[in-house]
Image (cartoon, rainbow, N blue to C red; front, top):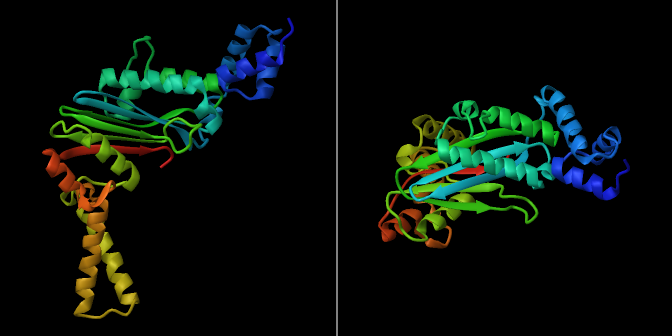
Length: 275
């Protein structure tokens, strides 16, 4: 059975396999499309262990939000070609739908959980790995529940799926404020909600670095102590969400925006592919 260039294209789009691999599969299958898909899947499965050590620096972030529940998931692959593919994006949606249902916040427990198909998440990912011919892995997941959740998904390139995703949990629904704060988090990448959340060892490390820097700059007492503490305070403000200047109005802090809306942030997740 002969096959055409259109058949190769169709097979490549369906499996995300390389053009040469698609041609070889169609040759082996005598031009039978369905059989060629099976051949690629089988050969892909055989190569799963060989792909264990490969880097997965591409992929996407996907999320689902419904009222007081929000979930987010980062699915990684090796190339942007696969990330752009329909099958990879469908796999991500299958996984995040299960995450929404299971509400499991631990990656290992999530991988071991059983989906509606009767397969575990790990088996489903392994099958995607085989079909797409690349190492596919769930890098991280997040679950926020119990109060309103805002969401923002950002595409760094129009031809790629979202590469940055943010969920932010509020104490009270506040219209567009949840989305606005999520956009702010996407842009400014805070590490903590408030200064009290910053670990003591992180502050002490920053104080040590500030001390060394000030000494190298020739600063001496009594100015030295004030300079060091000033830099430590600046660091804490920089990494604390509510103390940052708000992205849409730099004259106000995020805390002021939240106070004006009568709400507050209790938690957030910010995922960026590969970071």
